[in-house]
Length: 305
Image (cartoon, rainbow, N blue to C red; front, side):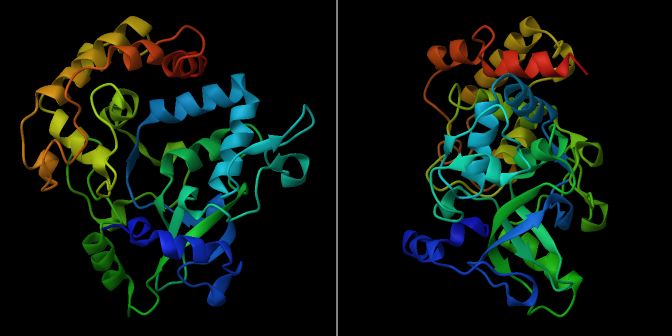
């Protein structure tokens, strides 16, 4: 079980009253404000197209950007913003609730024996915040401390514990094992490999699979690992809507066709990993909605680079 999954509903309620702390005073359950350059990644790859969707959506619909900032900070959603609002100025917009009031919506970090912060959930969102206008290395976010590993003697013990707890993914975008020394040392898309299969899992969600009530850590990466040998994404032009339609169709049908009790080496069955019973045509149509579908936002941003 990963660190985020350790929180029970009762503990989540207690977290609302948790003190905001920093440095040595931080403990599991605290909420703290950090800049993005203070956070270290725990996976080597992200789905670039998932980040491009977020950036495209933020650019075309600023309300979505401020709403996501509010949600990530545990403030439920956006209450008010205007043309003068700036993402890096919390006083320029208003959220529905106070910081940390909704801890289940927040991204999580753990504290290592070297007192550094390691991100256990939120690599795509925080990379989008890093890349967006008004974001960057010094962009501030509030995060939830999921676990404190400072009782361990050294970083070797830390990484062993991280693997045991499911808080790191040590495989590259080709599915090959890596060591923790090969992980990126900073957020920012240029530091990450692009895993196209991870993007496909994001966009096929609701079409061929749904997130189970209690997902295992890195569920999408296990699916991606399973799919690499079933679908060759190099066959599709992922800069066009037609190519993306073909790719999502192929990935979705591959997900639906898989019969396994050990998806991607996860030890989980396809059902436990969220496989749907059939292809959801309505969700597929929504994904490709003209101008306002996720693929439209993503391609508009991606092809502008």
